[in-house]
Image 1: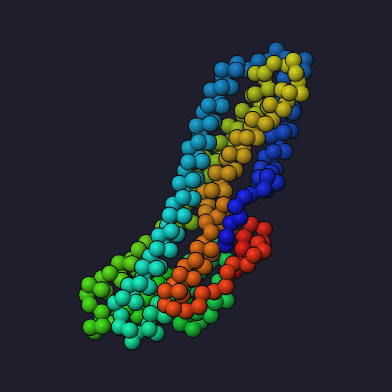
Image 2: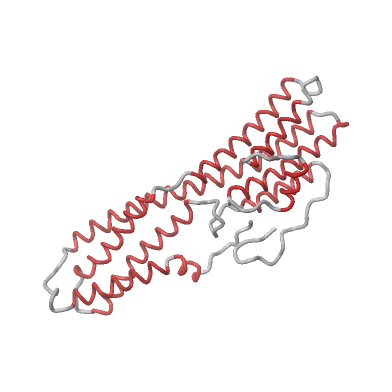
Length: 294
């Protein structure tokens, strides 16, 4: 899946649309109440609003930082998968005899399928036809399909323990496979670790509380400007929070998703070129929304 270089403004509006409506309604109602005769003497000190706004800013900064850390970790993991996939095939090519070209091709094609299977598994999508065909041909029925495919690497390695691979070479290849297994586990940890819901609800509550209190701290000289200000500031807070929510789940098929399909295609091209086979065609020129469907 290949992300486009930009996300249109209308897309951001859709992300915060519901909160945009609620905040606007609350701000208008609170603004009229603060301007009306019944509540005109009710005044919230601006210093208190500043304290609440500062606390909210700190919470949002922490929220965004933690979400970005998850997103960046996912990208680092997939960068490691790209490198380790190339390394694995280089090691197999180097350590096996030239007569074992078929074995090298088996390793390369299995690694290609593993990358696509892992990306589809993380997104909880149905496996593509090529992955399904590989699973049927090799009778892989593991609940964790990527782990089952990775186990096929180990099974093939066992056949070379009779002397075709030295102990040193075996350790080197096994070390690369362990790195791939570790990367798979890190992806699964990110996928299955849910960001605390209570934290998001607390931030939401504080934003709405801030939106209600803000009109009572502003001057009533310009009611239209006052209503606009009491709406736009909470909306900006909401937009920041929604952005962090999108970043916190990098395997959820969203515009901020880790481009795993594109990375898998890159790995496929590299591995096929390493073993001297023709690379697949380039990515289609016409995107489907924010993604290239392969």
